[in-house]
Amino acid sequence: MVLNIKMHIQLQANKLSKKPAYQAINVEVGVVIIGRNEGDRLIQCLKSLSKFTPQIVYVDSSSSDNSLEEAKNHGAHAVSLDMSQGFTAARARNAGFKKIIEIYPDLTFIQFVDGDCEVLEGWIENSVLFLKNNSHVAVVNGVLDERFPNKTIYNRMCDSEWKTPTGELKYCGGNALMRVDAFKNEGGFLPDLIAGEEPELCIRLRRSGWKIWHLNHPMMLHDANITSFFQWWKRTMRAGYAFAEGANLHGVAPEYHWIKESRRAWFWGFILPIITLVMFFLNWKIALILLLVYPLQIVKLTFKRNNPINFYFAFFLVLGKFAEAIGQLKFLKKRYLKEKAQLIEYK
Image 1 (cartoon, rainbow, N blue to C red):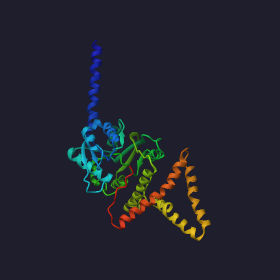
Image 2 (tube, rainbow, N blue to C red):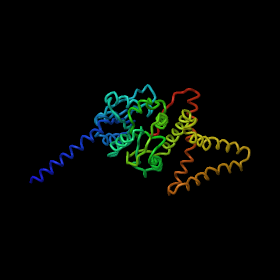
Image 3 (cartoon, helix red, strand yellow):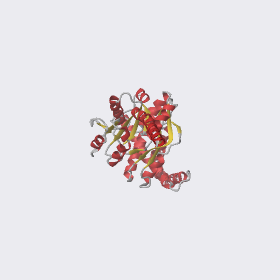
Image 4 (tube, helix red, strand yellow):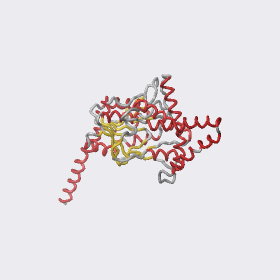
């Protein structure tokens, strides 16, 4: 009987000794969620972060559903962006960071989350411990998987896109844990970028001596929900725009940021089609030979990796260069006509 009582007391003591350490990590972390009409995905996202309530800020970009109300109902601080300015993910994340630091000025780490993601158990605690043990690292992300990769070919391509080698990286994605001081010292994201704001911030962080790291640890489930060709086309066009904008900002040595990606888009999506079209009027046989370059490129990419669905990936990679080229042209039009950038939404 005495032995059982002692064992019970020891078990309770062990639980209490672990709880403060766990809570100590939680009070150091703030969460910024951004979203627009995410519906049930946002609810799932908020539920997965319940242990960090109330240190959560949800930033809404003019949703027409009940996203703001759901965020408040789940204990998050809700921010609605001013509609008089253009919406960008960068602007939303900056607004969320500003708000949460105003409420909790002593936070050490910020976890940025897209509203279509579910944060997996243990991710934040493990990544915080990693940053504490690696003072030279400013940003860390982990394994991001598609929730429904087999629903559409577009979701499957997204799932493949999320795969990142473990260790030091040049860039991170939108879902990442960052040091508050590092983020603040760099001035956060560039708010006018309609895409590619995370790689751009990572360039500035690395120039300041920080490292970006990928952990082989489950981080989140993502729901791309790309169900149509039109959605994929707009998303790919946005990528082309981001390549052009990134190259314009950091395309010189030593970064040469997105120079190769931009050149590929120009060659496959604009220059080669123009040359082929001109050749049809000069020598149609040569024009037909030039057209064969596209299926040959698809075949080359198909056998580049040992994957049974690579033909579809290869086909869309080649086709996507036309969408990327349009994105490049959109950026040039905006730049030279000094137009205001417009968000390219795909869902």
